[in-house]
Amino acid sequence: MKGQTVGATGLLWPSNKAMLDLREISCQDYILEETTPLDLLWPASLINEQARSSTRRSWAIPLATFAFILSIIAAFIIGPLQMILVAAILDYNWVTTVYFPNALHFTLITTGFIALIGFVGLILSWRTHPKPTYVSATLILGSLIEIALIWISGRITSWAPHVLSLILLIVAAFFIISALLINKQFFRKTRNSLFTNIILSLLIVFALTEAILSAIYVFEPTFTHDSAEVEQLATAHEQAQLPGVSRNLSDLTYVLCDSPYQLIYQAQDGDSGLFECSNSGEVYSVQETPERSNKSVFGAAMYLGTTHDDKVSLAFPSTRYLYRTLPNTATEAELVLMYPAASEQELVDNIVQPLLDYWQQYHDQNLFINIFYNDDFSQVNSTRDFVLMAALDTMVMTASLPRGNTLQGYFNGIIVPYYYEADTALKALRELGSAPELYANSSRIALTDSRHISLHLAANTELTSETLRELLQNSFVGGIE
Image (cartoon, rainbow, N blue to C red; front, side, top):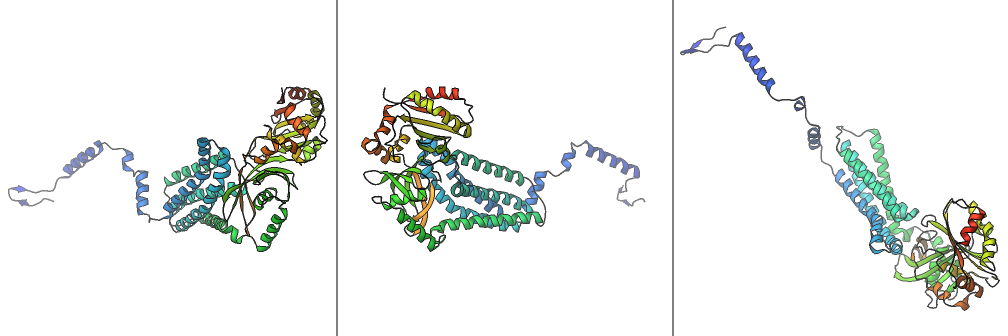
């Protein structure tokens, strides 16, 4: 159809040919532009960003992050900070027996607060989309596992500082990486799956359990023990006290032994002594400390070994000995024998076969053995006569105790924790050693005048009678030149 003429010129519709030419030119111009297929797609990061911006804001992730950070701080205080202090002040005993119990005490109190934050974060996660659920649940699970490891190391078992630090750091790193990887994803769903709800339910129970345990720990002295139990333990403490031994020193010793005890020697000032447990034969050097608290008792102790061990008694009958093994902390067992012999050669001849038989049965642990000798031990009748064997570089000083450095006992009408640091002074043992008239003369000769065997045996070392004899002959040390 033709258009009307307007004025001097006419406004007409383009012909079909002109329209086709115009279309071809337009398409060529469009094709010539620099474009790639990727420009036609939305970047994944932009999609996630827009999806996040359209999602309702929630406090779940901030709370989960806060709980996770607090748990890492708590883990750092009782784990890596121990190693830092050991390297800084070079006092392993103080770090493990003074710093760690006190740091653990305050850390366990704060674990309930961390668990409650995690509990609130889980409840909020339940009401949001799965994406924040996944991230927050991962962070909260990490914090709860860190708390659980703190409880295990403080209340169930005793880990060496480097082992505890390594475990806590590995767990923290794992959950940090997991949270970062999950945070890069976005899952667009309107409700949590059944499996997700089950996981959240279990985590909520986990968080509540840890919060309750923390509350029990805080109020433990006031309601965790009934009156009959307290009265029974108070009676046991009172009956165990020996004449001349102060009540505090007696209580410290009774808790260590978990039974009545015998006095080996008490220092002149009365604040320390050597004691032997009646039931186990364990020998301790115990000392009172000036630190006091209404809800805990503090003291110092050193485990010197036991005089009653079935396998040692069977292998070396008619001998006096101290045997100490601390598998969780010590790298080798320690055995000190007082053996009858008139000379070094007779000692080697008499000890080779019994020691070889013992080693063939119990060679799975490193052994540090020291053997003293004399031709007459008839005067050696009590532990006092040979306990000094532990003082002549025959046993390594250690802060570890057989049942741990934190034990439960009676004090001032309630059951409280007893905290033990290392008794590095060994006052009673030193006093006893400086007064030869207090123990058998034959022991003094064996300990100071004659040389003695001092030998380290590595675990699973193959020994024959000849090789052991040679080792023994070359291992004599000490004595008067």
